Length: 248
Image (cartoon, rainbow, N blue to C red; front, top):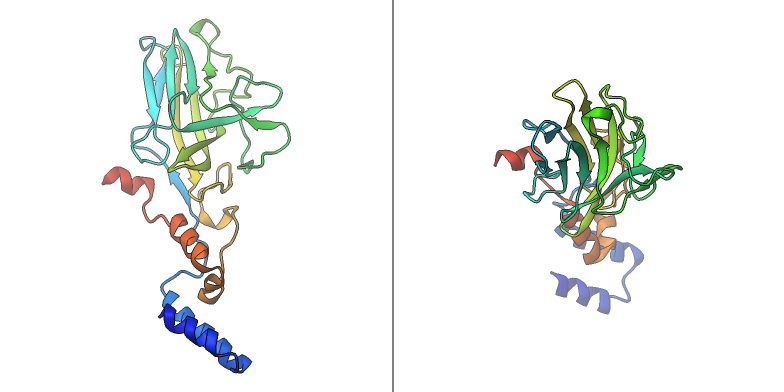
């Protein structure tokens, strides 16, 4: 099919504009199975067994958090001498949103705050692999490292992680409970944009609000992008949610 199209386009210099357009439209028919809208999606997860850590557990106890369900942990919760830390050293996590004025904490984010390549003024991502203190030892368990957390859920933070060599952005709901055995931290839900470098709003669980670059609105427009456009569409397409992966 491609050889025929190339031959017609090369030798058809005398064709009218209408005939040339018909030829291009005809060649586009090979792409009739491609979608007409961007295939980005927000993946929202409410885990059956959420990552959780407690100050009463032995020092060194860890709870691993696999954001996208690919069996490769992205972050960890850890009890270190009754100090509850959040980190990603040696894992796929690429940092959390922190305040530019406080370089060693996790910042509580309001609903609808944008998490992505661009952050609002006053926010930045922590370095990949760094630990962030969520709760200090039981003697000062009410101190959440000045991140703005109060222990009254829901409370949210932003994060980014690597998967397949691409960077993804998301938010998580963190429950900080000071009344249970000195202190317990649980990641109760999260969501991320499954388009590489795609942004997400804190609290967003629906695809319609996704902040991403739209793809061509028709097969003919996609054809104009050539092989690169088809490759990008295929790369972005993900048919399984995290819940489906976990159930497999």
